[in-house]
Amino acid sequence: MKDVLIIGGGIAGTTLSFQLHRAGWTIHLVDEPKEFTASKVASGLYNPLVLKRRRVVWKAPEMLDTLPSFYRQMEAECNGDFFDDKPVWEVLHDPGVENDWVALSDLPKFEPLIGAVLSNPNPNVIAHKIGEVAGSGRVDVPKMIQEWSKHLKSISSFSEGWVEPQELTYSDDSWEWKGQRFKRVIWTKGFDHHHPHFPDLPFSPTKGEVLIVKSPELNLDHILHGGVFIMPLGEDLYKVGATYSWDPLDVIPTSEGKEHLLAEWKKLVNAECEVVEHVAGIRPNVKDRKPLLGKSTEVPESYIFNGLGSRGILMAPWLSEMMLNFVQGDLQLLPEVDINRFS
Ligand SMILES: Cc1cc2nc3c(=O)[nH]c(=O)nc-3n(C[C@H](O)[C@H](O)[C@H](O)COP(=O)(O)OP(=O)(O)OC[C@H]3O[C@@H](n4cnc5c(N)ncnc54)[C@H](O)[C@@H]3O)c2cc1C
Image (cartoon, rainbow, N blue to C red; front, side):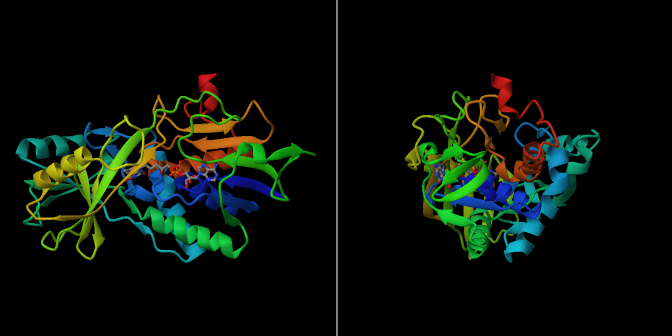
């Protein structure tokens, strides 16, 4: 019998499975490999600031404490290469914006997160100055998912496929699925309005679109932010994102999304680009913008790890550790993330 069956292999299931695996748990991860999930289209940035509103993300310092070592250990465990802690460059458009940015570092909670202010090193970037965001960087999410699942497959702990809750049966203090037994099940399915084990969770999902563009003349080696992100992918390719919309909630890219992102590109850089790809995914946001962790009150030994919203990469190492301690019975969940806050 294994300790846990994890259902859903996006950022949530991938990071949680690593967290439990490194704690010595026996796990099995099962994922339906859809092409356009939130995790597959995500830019993978982690960034402790809400840049538009000049705010610190909820619990960001705690999250950053464990983040680099978590992803580096994961890389080491699966022989992967997906973590990059090169800081994000915030575009400072004029001396007034630069002064406001520098003034933030006088506030104790911002001080560790405001990095160096640089003269604009790239003539193609439209900026007065560049502000480095300390404690920011990127995870190449599709690569992380691929390399971790390949590793799990090599130890017979991963399979592909769709799992319906009715396929699982609980008896003799354990769950049975496809002839295997598990002490518990954890659902990490991304946005999901209708789960019988967790009815009525107030998801408020958002659709996001990104472009992959080719621009041989841009020559940018850092992630640039100013309204949207421009992220270098190598070989003159850049990811540009992301949009936010609610209706319709599908993964079909729109001409409005494309026009918006290209207009934002032009505000940030003086460089021609050609659109190579245009994709969309659905973020598992929640009405109160906090994650959804907890245990079912409907059925035994069934847990949820979800609601990573727009910041899965930043939150996942810290939250998955909290989830581990909760499932082990060592720790209560923070009330802000506990699904019981809605009951
Ligand atoms: C355009 C866009 C850009 C983004 N950029 C960033 C960013 O830069 N940084 C950041 O941190 N976050 C970003 N996000 C948000 C991030 O993508 C999410 O926080 C994260 O991907 C959520 O992960 P998840 O595993 O909960 O869900 P998902 O990515 O939706 O993964 C769920 C997985 O479970 C599988 N699954 C579902 N049901 C079943 C079932 N019944 N049986 C088997 N498998 C199942 C699905 O096929 C899928 O593979 C972005 C999102 C979008 C849409």
